[in-house]
Image (cartoon, rainbow, N blue to C red; front, top):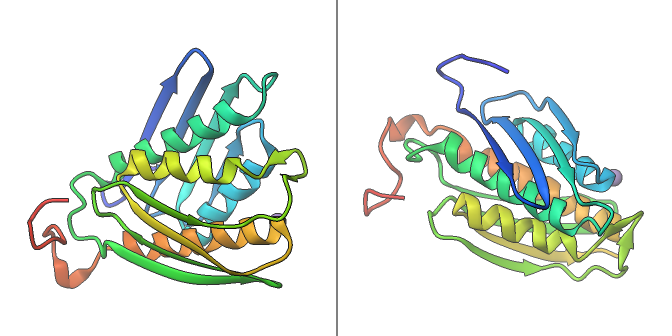
Length: 201
Ligand SMILES: [Mn+2]
């Protein structure tokens, strides 16, 4: 953790009857990640966000895994989205838009996003298998719905190619991470103004 004032960092602790999730993140990090969600594939994807987004992330979750991974997966997404919004504050000076096309072997996934203040998800993945390891591939969409709603982000995901579910999902998280890195950068020509013609995001 850092207390450096130039770092945009935030932590959120969220407790419900189903889960207990803590997320700390630093948008001006180096890609250091500790992810303990109890869902190994989700941990693997959180590492992608951190490493390729250059966001330091610490996530710890307790959940009702005995039912399935659904609640924990969703609540990690909600808490991550809330921490993102908190770290961004009024969104002054950021580039705001980001996009990337990530290949992973045969998979190719395009992401475009906007820290618009308006939640929207266009989810264009078609995953060929129901599971990757023990992870239910329907949870990928649930995770992004949660992040988008709670960070107030517009997010478009397009699958351009891909056969293997693990590759397609991982390419998505890599493209998402690189898009976030672009959008979260401070634009020196913006100085500290809000990047909207309306003056508010
Ligand atoms: Mn992998």
